[in-house]
View 1 (cartoon, rainbow, N blue to C red):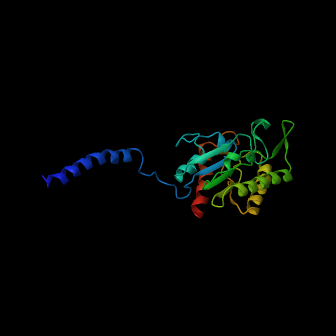
View 2: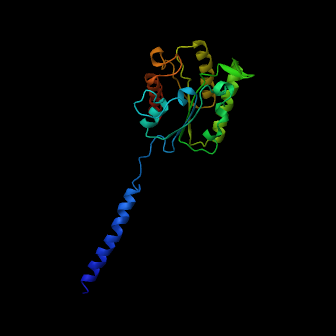
View 3: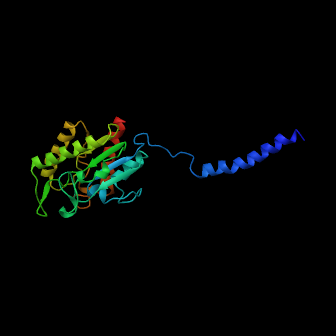
Length: 230
């Protein structure tokens, strides 16, 4: 009798523990892979080049941000609106500018914040209509927004400014607006990634918005830059 008691107790213990072990594995105790580049995720602030696209791998409308996020195994959260920018509110002057989206920066601790925009900032809104924007107005809006990000985001967050992805239309404003954004990014000590030449005529659907090849081209620029510095 004395030799059987420990054996019986061991069997009972095994029967009690086994369901717990199975439950533990079934409920996700196995940890999901953590992105080495962005373990706390990526926040993207943008305009229609970000807003109007989806997160479906291989789809014609898969966004550049989706391609980047999946490449780095990182969760991407978007704060994007068509027609918007550093200076110009979206949705025909009734939307908001980048700085008017505090959920993208206040109280957040993402690993990476990427700002995609500027394509719309050739214009400002006055009286509900678009009017050409001065260099001074664009500069002030970009400077103010980058200051705000650096004030509210922790030092651990890496901030990336994309040169505005620009299709074939309106090249004079491409040069003007891109130069201002790059100058301000460098003045703030923030990384700038050029997208010049990414959106060629065969990579856009309307002279402005990327098709799948265009979104891939933008994503490749971002991935290459992040790979080179990570």
